[in-house]
Length: 307
Image (cartoon, rainbow, N blue to C red; front, top):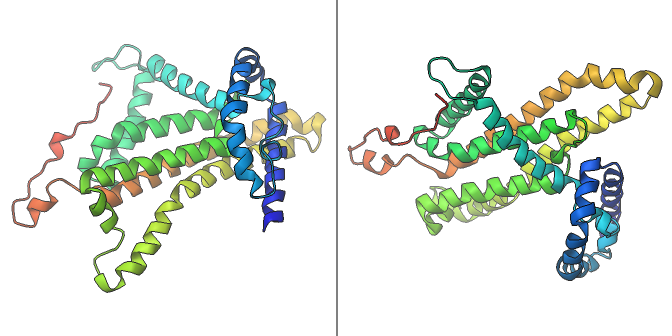
């Protein structure tokens, strides 16, 4: 088991090193100006911690993450994800232009299509009361889509082709829907729904549901990473079959497929996040409906629109 883990860690380190060497000029510039500070922080705080953890598996931080140096102290995926955040905000600001209800521009109409699509999904999956979660869900959608598309442009790489980014996104979704469950039902009420309604099999159901929920951040992260990383590797492999012919032609021909993968993976991540929210969030009038006092409170939840 330890030999297997060590082998997998070694392969991961080789992939990290290969992508670090192929990092665009932007990543190298960031490390040139800020790498020394990040390197000193790592050596003082994170390196000793990883050293203790990985020693139990017969490995080292260098074997897992590659050589430590000021030149690669800030990983390419960190730089690219920060750029994805900046680009997302800039794109929305540019596309919305001057908001107009009578004569909306093309950018505003494009944004409205995305807003209405996510809004409709939330209403169908979570319910009208779920519109209060729209800002976070829409943020996931925009940020992941921009991250997936960054690899199409020079000077950029796809941050979602790194497990560190996709696991962070998966963990964020996990923490958010559990926060909603605890906020609406209380801590023990949130745990109680894992047990199901049948008391005599509650311990078994609770164990299964708990394990199922705990692995969700990993399944979300692995699914997104595997598809984006595989898409890049397939394009790279085919492009190098005959460099003189396939290097430029094949990526252009396969670009629509890569575009489809980028959109579908964004859709899958957002869809699953909404399904998880629907499991823990319930309409505020449910308790009254049991006593014949149901009322429609959906009007109390408003989603910001661009018009």
